Each structure stands twice: as C-alpha cells, then as structure tokens.
Amino acid sequence: MKKIFVLGASALQVPAIKNAKEKGLYVYALDYDPEAVGIAYADEFLCISTIDKEAVLEAAKKYEPDYIMTSTSDMPVRCAAWVNEQLGKKADIAYEDAICATDKVHMRRRMKEKNVPVPEFHVVDSFEDFKEAASLIGTRFVSKPADNAASRGVVLVDLSSKQEVLEGIGADFSDNMSDEAFYKAIYEYSKGYSRGGEVLVEEFMEGPEVSVESITVEGESHIITITDKMVTEVPFFVETGHTEPSRLPLDVQEDIRNVALKAIAALGVKNGPTHTEIKVTKSGAKLVEIAARLGGDFITSRLVPLSTGVDMIDCQLSSTLGETVNWQSTKSCGSAIRFIFADDKEDTKEQVIKSIDGIEEAKKMPGVAEVVMTKKAGDLAGNLTNSGDRYGHVIATGKDAEEAARNAEAAVKKIVIVKTDK
Image (cartoon, rainbow, N blue to C red; front, side, top):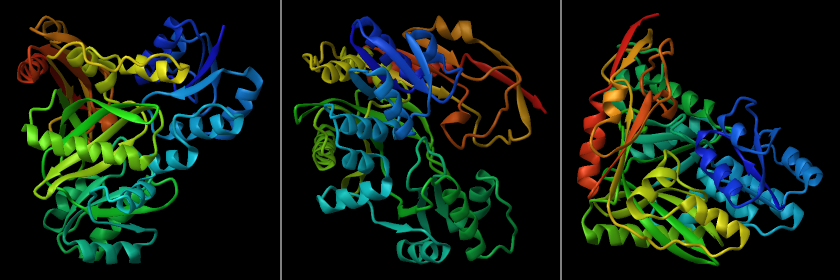
C-alpha cells in the first residue's frame, strides 16, 4: 500500500484526507494540534508542525511516504515543496517558487518583474520607512504583514477614520492623537503578525473582488470558475461570503482570466491547484494575491463541486499520484456560502454567546446544503477582525448564482445569536 503525508489536519484538510483514503492510500496526518479534527479520518497521526520543514523531513525519512502534499494552507506549501526537493520527489512547485507564493513581498516583486498588474507597494522593516511609504501612497492605504494569511494583521489605514481604525485593532485613541502616533499603532499591529518582521504598505484598490480557482496539468493551466467575494473593508478585509459563478460582465471576467493565467505562469506552477485573488479596479483587473493551493473558506471543497461538478480535491490528488486529472465541468448552476458573524456596529468585545437558535429551521430552507456553527454558547462574541471571529456558515445552491445567494442569505436570517456580558 502506498503512503502519503497530508500536511495539516484541520477541518479544511479533512476532504483531502478522506479522498486519499478513498484512493487506497495509507494516510499520515501531520499537525501541531493533537486534537485536530482530521486525525480521526487518517490512518496515523504525527504531531509535527506543518511549517517545521526539518521535522517533516526527518519524519519522511523514517516513515518513507510515497507522496507529500498539503491542501488549503499557505505555509505548508513551502514545507511540502522543500521536503519533496530534499528527497528527490516530484514537486508541483519548486521551493523557490513556493516562497514566492507564501510571502507577499516576494510575490509582489515577482509579479511586477513579470508584468502582472499589481497595486503600488512598498516593503518596510522600520517605522521610519513605514512613514515614508505612507507619505508616498497617500492618506488611505493597506498595511499588512508580509508573510501571514486569513486577514491577520491586515488593516485599511485611513487618516480620516483614526478612531474607527484603532478601535478595530484594539489600540488606544485620543482626540489629539498625531498622525505619527496613529501610524505607529498601525505599524506595530501589522508587524506583530509578521513572522519575518517585514510589513507591506500598498495602494488600496477599490472595486469588486474575486478569486479564480484553477488547476495546472503539466504546465497547462485550466480555470475552473471565478468566485465573487464579499469582503469587509473598513478597517479589515475579512471574507464574509462567496458566490459562484461570478456575476460580473463577461468582458470583465475575460480580463480577470487573463491576469490569473499570467500570474500562474509567473509563479512557476508545474502541476496542481492555484487560488488567485483579484480586484477589478477602474484601470482593470489587478492581482491581490496568488496561492499555490486549493482555495479555503470551503470554496474548492464545497462550492466548486456544487456549481461545476469538478472535484478539485480529487484533481489535486490525482495530479500528485500521476493519474488523469478530471478538471472539466459537468454542470452549470449556482452555489454560495454566507458566514455568520457579529455586526460590525456592535461592540461585542466584552460579551459571550448565550445561545444560538434557529439552526434546524435554517437547514430546512430551500437550497440549503449545509449549516455549520464553529462557535457555541459560552464562547467569546468577538468583533470581526479576522476569519477566526466568524460564528459559522451556511452553504446553499440554486439554479444560478443569484438564487444560490438568496437561499444562503435567507437561511442565515433564521439563525439568532443571543449574547450576554461576560
């Protein structure tokens, strides 16, 4: 029996673990969390951090897996690429390119060099450089750590909304606060989430945001679908929903496809999935980020199969195993996910969830495929600053994107979350 290392055992990695089992592989799930939900579906669990490449390599030499892969997480992409290279195994992406895919600074520089449309950006590692970058871009820009994900440390900086921005990141505000003190708080916040200490200061791009789900087979990339994204803006960028297929005009979608394909080529992906985030600005589509992995937020695990019939998890594993990759769509309908979260206008910092009602009613609504709550009574009812602050989600289908979106939103309205003071 052939063996595989799946780097990661969180809920988002479970479909990959299950798929590998269905293909007859002996599955080792690796994760730093000894209580990760995916452990129950694997043959064996190794309590190893998925970003500790030396430890993963040592384990690979001991257990001798035939394949090493990850599914929906950014940093394990680096680890898998490095370990595969060290062992002389086939890699979907070179380690050098994997760094580009997981470090925003490397990514921005590579894309600019390859003439992929990107926003104006500056890389800083000191507060003085941060202030200078801010003066070059203007009074409204984005500050983010160079090497993190899930909206951690990402802030929309706006001098006209100091109080709102600082309250959002839990920093102190005063009426007579100087611009320098304001920028200092932002810089420290973003830097605090940066593993390497670098912060990216970049142009704020206005316009609709989408993600492009693609599979590359022997260097040829195939776009499966374009997903419309719902993202908070001021002061954070947290995804609150996704809808497929995109409802943007066809000429705009063609521009998006061109930018995505150009970015995939610039990244150097040989095989496997990519998840490309793009903003549609007044001057055309521009790259936000590209990841050499499957899309998270249940996009590729649930939405893509529901709307296109394509099982991208199976596509990735088939590519890893050297099998035929079935990337062609078999149906055309709509799917949508809507996340449940605290209203941004609410001050929930000092509250906990008292009860959650209406879940069974939501499940019975038309088109609903799934209702999952990730928080429960007694958990903190925090404001929405990153993906971990969301309470749960609803996934729904429909004959098209519009109907799927309506079905998901109607189901969300059935769920009532009661909060109380701590």
